[in-house]
Length: 499
Image (cartoon, rainbow, N blue to C red):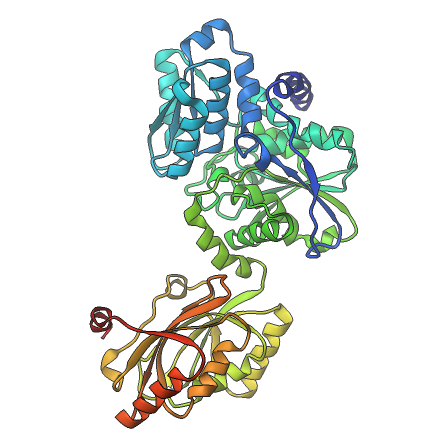
């Protein structure tokens, strides 16, 4: 089967290169990995994904009768666009089934690629449900199903990206990290690279909650996962392909899994090094490399940025979790005294570390439990925790806990004495929050603090202080007016709801 796949890639080159231009292979300029890293920029293809290659090659061999009847496909996004652009170029009718939950951006992209030649049908909650519906229609109406991965012709087209890697002249490479969804791209690229670089190691990379190929290889047969995580929707496949499974089993040297946070860190690295923002599936190979970066020291590695079709709404989650995936961001719950100056003393323990999030509300008259997000290297983080232990400040890591993830800030208004709520803006730099607290210490006690880093030059926080007397409240407001920071009063309606 490996030889059959190699021959299909050979045949596919003529068809694929007649349709669109090759995508570039670029050196990734980063100090995060001590070795040479090259990325294949499939995000720069006509549909911002490699998927057009397989769809175009498969549809290029349709008979006249098959073209006349039309084709059917199922996809969560990128394969759908590939089929759509091929249908438009070849003037073939295509009905494409997509999960109901498919982001609107991907639905619009399919319609734009296919124009009058494509009909989009939303069915089911995931790819498997859409695929089942599409298969039924094919059987009932005698249409041709264009599979996204489990077809040698589809894989043959996808393998042309490996041909471009070889033809770039940048090789040979020591290692390739290839993302796996159904396994078509990993199998075809591995097939081609191993023929031209016999000593190369091919590492397959799957999401932790999507590892259908790893499960198949461990079981010795194709198995269906009961559930797959959908953060990386482009690789969310419950069951490896009947064709791709034996190919990946024979061609891959290893399969590793990465977390969603590690995917976010890889996306951030792409942005910082290449000004490229891949979708989670697009960054999966690079995430695998980052996980094994010690093994890449002094070696030449290649990864595929296989797509960048991501819904805009995902950006905030990615930005929040990228630091966690890079082991640079953690959230801790501290226990301190509910007294004036105690929060400032806690801030002093952080040294020069960046506070990137603050979740705190008063729930007790004597003790306080703020949750603080810190950004620092693992070595700096260790020193911070050592200082907390020296100062006898109890703490626990709550990075992965649900109340922190969803920013649930508990507070008890009845315990707050004449609270004064306001919004404040301060320079987004290490120590800025600590400097502000120094200016107002002794006048009031903090009873609410809600802040999250937004990536801007200024930080915005919602704070509340409580006072032992109206005189201290007046002094605090005077100090606030003269502290050099911009602040805003809370709207009366909002304040009533909060209290």
